[in-house]
Image (cartoon, rainbow, N blue to C red; front, top):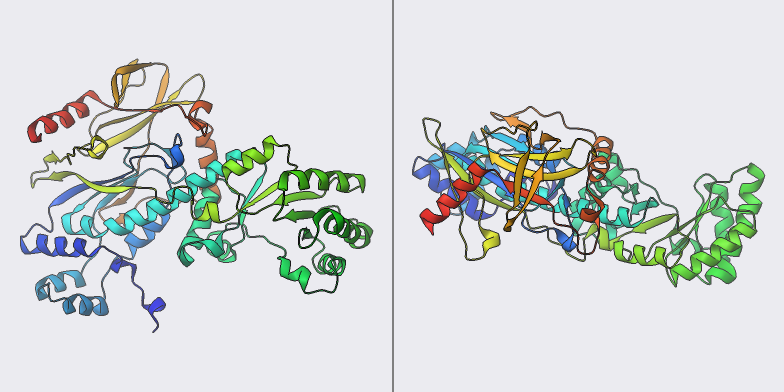
Amino acid sequence: MDRQERRNLSMLFDFYEMTMSGGYFRLGMQDRVTYFDVFFRRVPDRGGFAIAAGLEQLVDYIRDLHFDEEDIAYLRSKNLFGEDFLDYLRQFRFTGDIWAVPEGTPVFPGEPLVTVRAPASQAQLIETYALLAINHQSLIATKANRVVRAAQGRTVLEFGSRRAQGADGAIVGARAAYIGGVHGTACAVSDQLYGVPAAGTMAHSWVQMFDTQYEAFKTYCEIYPTNAVLLVDTYNTLKSGVPDAIRAFNEVLKPRGITKCGIRLDSGDIAYLTKEARKMLDEAGWQSCTISASNALDENLITDLLLQGARIDCFGVGERLITARSEPVFGCVYKLAAVEDGDGTIRPKIKISENVAKITTPHFKKLYRFYGSDTGKAIADYMTVHDETVDDSRPLTIFDPDATWKKKEVYDFTARELQVPVFRKGELVYKLPSLPEIRAYCLKEVDTLWEEVKRFDNPHKYYVDLSRRLWDVKHGLLEQNG
């Protein structure tokens, strides 16, 4: 069996998680119920919001959580763990509870994207994978949504497999990009595994394989008449590329009554070339021919191209999307929020730092989103202690936690609890939506945000407030431990 077939993702943990779990076992603390939150501190690219993604992969990981004899043998070889602990790992399964915001939800710093309630050893061991799954896909979904919004309704395809950080980065990266709003991918295996629509036509090498560019175009149109998108910049885009494409369309597609076709540019002055190409195609009667553009694009370059009047119907976005090149780390953390005594009493826990941004919000919490009853727009998010409820029939005053003098009166609103139960006592209780359902939900929820929150430059800060009771708990612990 090779290494890839042997790979058990249960072993994908930072080693200190195993030493801590072993320590809990030695002390008889392995079954102490704990509460952990997954949250992030800052939106990438100085954006106004992020998109949560990666929950399905976390679910798959939790359901398969186990250690086999090869894993036990490896851990024994470290000479750190007793046989009684290794026997415990042989029977290891996740038996806790998990709540999470659904994939595709717009989210904000400090909010629990995932909450884990589980025995200490179980909760500790899943930390690395929980962060990996949520961090990576939330990063790519967030970047994709920025790119899609920059394209202003035009088609966006994810083209980044060859520049991704490894196979998993390409495969689930395409999935996350689809959640964020792209229309498809170049990555065939993402289509096969997840249903992300895959598409593609030719590279420059196809054109170079023939004696003439025209022969390359004509042959391709003959083989794939319903998928004829021709790459026109191998030699000279305007002198030969576009004219040869028009000739191939006229001689192969037109006699068959096919009007759906396209050209693609991957280099040069894209704004100028697409404007000139559009004139040439229209004059030749190919108004239906679409123009695609690629070449290291991102939301900023797409915005600039459209401001210059570029005539582009479809954007192929590769390395700067699949790697989130402008800011390639999302920054979710996994922090203890509470522990539970044997009698069920929940004891909140806090992490304090001289860096205010690193101070955590303690306790087992609920997360609400308030929507204006008249507009349907998201007004604010609100975190409470787990057993609090929100009465949305009465006005409520909320505060900006970073500026307690800044308050907002909320009235005539509907409150929705954002987290949903995913696991109860180790059993999956959440029906995973299909990928198209997640994508549609994401686009619908992004549409509930005000334009001021969605703008790229200096977005309006969205309110995320704590209930008075939760605020009192947090500040009580700060005073107690300060």
